[in-house]
Image 1 (cartoon, rainbow, N blue to C red):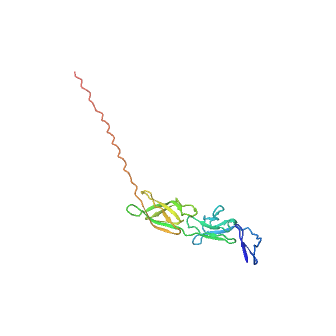
Image 2: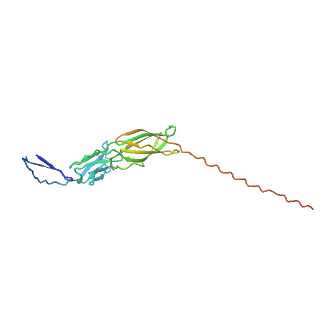
Image 3: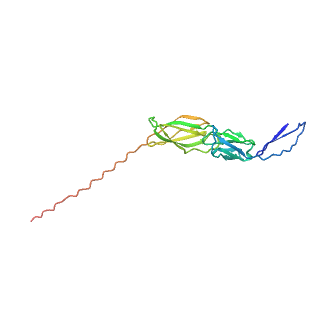
Length: 233
């Protein structure tokens, strides 16, 4: 028989235990402190992702790290035995892994979602030049806080737009164009790796009020010329 003993923050230790006929058996097991946990966060294609948030041991004893330019990260040995995941505003969250000892972790982010649509005027004519801003973002229920891309703006042409690499959640877009009143979309739910198509935002032209006509000034009164009265002799 073999017995494996593990404790959070320590390397697992396995020892042989002889056959036990009956009763309890006592063994003293000495555990060695685990080394720091190393890993890398990658995108769906396997490329390192910078600025991803790595979270381990949810709860009061949670630990977190931010991946560097190559996607690499480190966590303290106390996370050994916990689950770990990674999040990034442009991707879906990585599948949670259990942290073992003695091996590097690879946290693979899922593909982000996208929103595709059109911006038209009241007659249905595509706008030639316009901008789309992510006005607000609400993370999917139960999803970790991955930061927000709210306020991010992009310029588009010929009526069509596409916003890619979106984390799961609900988005509201705002469209702006010269001579048009800003218009907002309905709330748009984007699922993990899902592309939402067919979003149409209709814009109305800015109404230009006629300037009030200037009141005519009265013509200056002409001074009456009076001839001097003739004196009678």
